[in-house]
Image 1 (cartoon, one colour):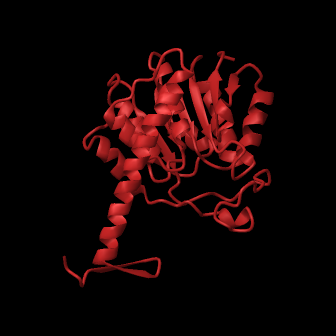
Image 2 (cartoon, rainbow, N blue to C red):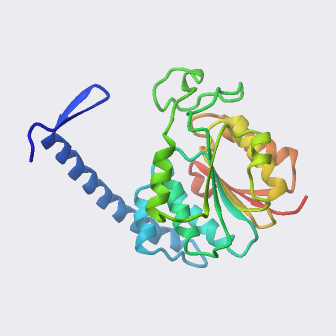
Image 3 (cartoon, rainbow, N blue to C red):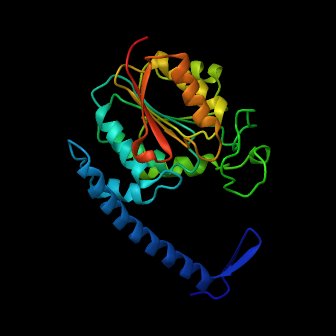
Length: 269
């Protein structure tokens, strides 16, 4: 090993031995995380009428999730399974580093070749908060909600790298760059959306997407909404407003009171 190898990350120098130690530590953590994923799957299937079948590749994707919990990942897989027979593509709004994207993409590649996966992100971090984005949990110790503008900014290449780890040549992945607004959605969306994962943290984009889905999601379609009652109050407020303004459009499920909810499209209204 070359003792002269050094890298600097956020102002801290690491030599070759420290880099190797960190690598081994991360590998150990991933091994433990995969065991946790196996245990979580066993517990999850106890509560299911039809157990969820998960292969080794999918377990690896579950173990690598960041942001989403293992339970949330399992409900994403269950939602994908339940919507496989429906018309429409799969969408993810707010992709960050692309770990959840890779989990979804893995399932897509094992299904009908006519279905595509659409991924939406500004790649500029969080937008300016709305007044309804009340800080609930100061996850980065910023002090105010306004200070989170621009945070959680991940380069587009991270997401594309995760997708390429699933398939290097697939034309079924559509990465849509830009702020998520009604106009942007109208211009860059599939005609039908069977499944959606929303992880945008804030009020306005969450409400805009949910309202948009009403016109594009067939009955039985499912939307998993992250950060419900976590970080910013805006996501919870957006969901509750949609449920009140469009009664009968969705049913809401809050499994195990975890940090996500599932909205199921119930009618064509």
